[in-house]
Length: 307
Image (cartoon, rainbow, N blue to C red):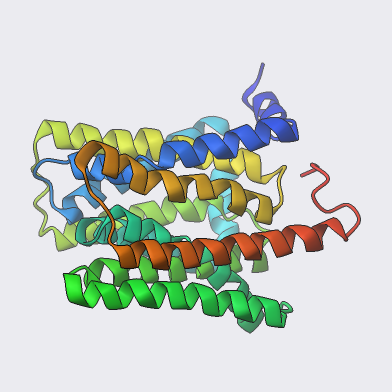
């Protein structure tokens, strides 16, 4: 079997398998906070260097093995928008680690989970996609939940981490909107570019000092080159067969599990404000996904399971 044959078979997986893939990707990604908490000595910038560096290099190897010419031509076709996408992905990855390092895992994942709602709002501004009064209400809910957690952060010295998560959510929204606007171009090389950008930026902020214990190196390399890469592959395959709303609802498994792991294993218990704000945000995300799913079912051919 050739590499292209394998790619073709993966992109045509049954919908039931796609559901399992996205659930598995959310389950695996939910361990990110626990992995970071297990790092012994490395600073947040050193963690980013090894994690995003391993992630970018692993993807480069995969792309080159598949089809080197296709990868190189894809980089050229992206143009300036590829750089913008890469910069936004770099920001997402960087803010994710900074947030986890400066606030609770629950705060990070709950604020980041508002990304799909922010995407709907940004798509209205940039792409002029319609947005009804219900969506405005949902956006207000997500912002209210985030505000509760941000205000709580001012009183508990977690404001920096909460702010980083909010910036990460906005970067995610911008990243997705550009993907929508450039849907006729393969923007996957921008993910590699963003990983390389994050590695370089973190290296500079670390002052070139990337000497950390071997155990920390292994954790970060496994996290980026193994876990994060597998999550991306599983999610990419699933996204070809499922609606965006379905993906959002299924990924909510990650938002619930991530705080659970750190609570069980290291006794990191979120505050009451985090619970309240998180429930509001997740309710908004679920409502937005439910509305999008209902809307798609009224359009012939949408969500039929064909790429």
